[in-house]
Length: 169
Length: 269
Image 1: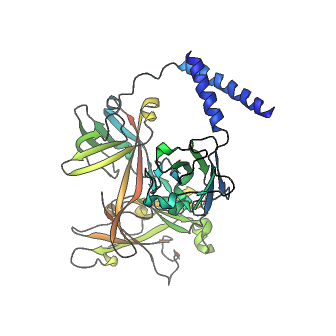
Image 2: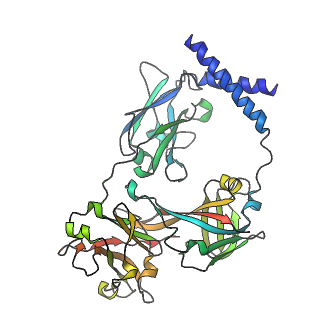
Image 3: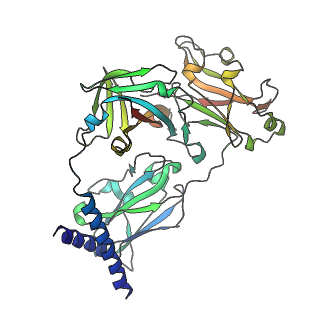
């Protein structure tokens, strides 16, 4: 009896899901991420995450109000060039101008900033933020050189700087 | 027609999913604890399978950090995946277990674990697999110090924050001060000689005053390469610091104890 009851519940849920699918229709064309990111972006928040800590009370610090991050902007141009502007005292973690590209045009997970031989990688957070809130969520991961137990240096991801930016134009 | 196909697919999926499960023992664990994961493959592509079965697993991390695959995730599984091989139950061939300590198995600090994503598979995907399972991980227990520096590792160009938690202060006089300052200097090299910390102490004043952030906690943030007056060629190798009242008559660590020191790393990007 319980077996039949379980299946009736599943059938009811299935009809509910189908109703939702009917309501929302087809999923449509893929998003044009390139067009979505072109523009000038201003920092709304800057969160710093410690990637190496064992202390949950010491894992994340909001540094948005410590410096004038609101005066830092990133402009991604249609022609693939980019510039930054920093009229306040915000520390800068990525290169200041050059060219930008996605790591993958179809399914981008990172924004690559390049200037000569210098490269800064900004990993996307939720790409839904572009569509839902017109916000760009990107993370710069700081690598540092740390000696291991034998004294041999190796690079390690130490800090994540998580930018949330909104479009100004 | 579309509705019927969707309904059939949904019901078929639901029926198949009956039986398969993943459980943890102990049920509540942190990523620093040893845990045994049991997966029941009944009703999956591995139902009745007699070959070797492996876990394919990933850390679902806190604070929006991206998921991270375990180093053993590689298909097809071979000698390099020995640590991911599951043990088949002698009494029920559809029951498999594996025991590991998540922070070691994934190479991820315990504090970053929110959940574990896991599935069981044959040596190759074509041998069959279970659905994805998600297992909750509890945050680790950690006793914070009265003065803590954030982050754990940093370069001279990173934002460093020093917290002072007066709730944990044992000196009643120091606890009652209510206004705190950072006494700080650096060690390092100018390429030829070691830097003398006495030449780099920041004067006590507004720039070194900690800000109250509530709940008895004070903090100060700075970027070392901008905070200290460096000469050309100076390279910061160490940060020296303590917390004091404005006059310096009260300090933590107390007088007679060594100043706190923290290595400053070279940045790699």
